[in-house]
Length: 515
Ligand code: KIV
Ligand code: ZN
Image 1: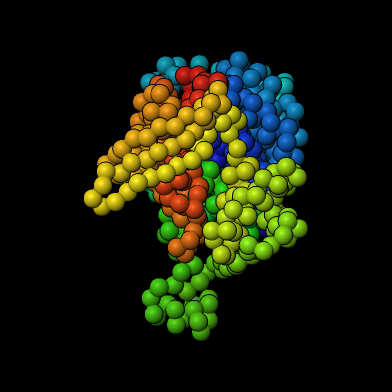
Image 2: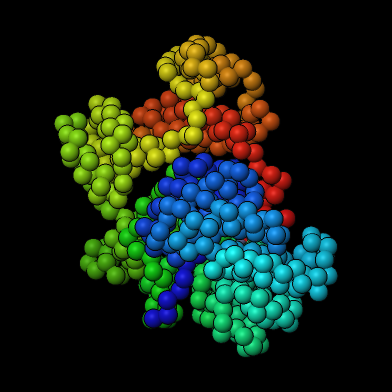
């Protein structure tokens, strides 16, 4: 079996998903889980983009030891320097530097001639290779680039010190036959290609990112890039869990495998979904809720007689457990601590104490506490905001079919003063949001609101995701509670707190890498 290196860009390309903004602790939590999943290279961010990105990449590089941590940089010395400062404490510092190579990008975006692009790419790789032991070079929009131009520039950047050559399908345009041809052509025409690993990075604009990644692997790619759940710019990136499971299930065909611990897939997917607010569709391949559900009578009958009739992936393979009832109201701290360990968390005593308190509160309201509930509580604990500017104290809502919905809320403000306000709205949620707006003393515009339950059952925890524009900035927020209205209030306050935290470390103009 050929080993395919997995390069995960959930924290960089994935974070470019509209409406997704992860805070420092959330990024660290995802990076730690990616390490547990067995990702070879974690792209932790774009260090030159903002002080926040810089600090997140630095902390991840210094914390994660089982995966190589990388950061993105344009072909600009100042950005390479920033990346080095962020990554130099890592176990295996690695730079990902890129420049566009397609005629469209060179002419309209870079306004550079092909010769200037070659010169710039070579200079940057040489400069980077003096600092970094590992340099990856990407030809942005490679799949719409001239093949002979690619051959010329790749040979030169390998000579300059690049050891991984990534050929992205930046706009999700290529077909399987074409990507196979591209990878074959490069291997047949670049004289020093044996000194580098070829990498594939596909976007999903035509719904072909996974198929194209697999086709590139068939044609010799030794590294595959993508994100968990396929999140990312526009229609997203190749979903890594799909690629890894396809290689596993069809290893007879591909003769290749990743180093993934496949049973960590479901956990990783749920964590990314929860923290980004990107809900996984029920019919999503490999990890969707319906991926293992058999609805029609003929299928059920077949599966009952022999599972392989309609099931090519077993739930166990990707870590979909029976989500059994684990703990209850009478469970003690010891059992709780063991459960947290079993779920793969490293919790400090302080964290344990706080989550145990939340668990007890939940157990008072909910009879059966499942793994998913504990996972939700632990995720919230680990994702604590850097600073809680506003905090919910009490919430009361008056609703009746013939009444005007009214909310009364008590919150602490950034000066830790307790403020109480009341307001009405056309519905309970609007009444809550109008009341919060009074307390924060500014207009906040709600641009997205989504709700889902953490588990099945009528006593499930509610999870609310919002996107809010406030004080000239915007952020997503998340709230979890037994009650949908409380979860709604918490999500809104969370978004406002994130806006205020972002103001501390504003992003520069280069927030979006793609044009
Ligand atoms: O899609 C793309 O081209 C990218 C590059 C920055 C590698 O994400
Ligand atoms: Zn990309």
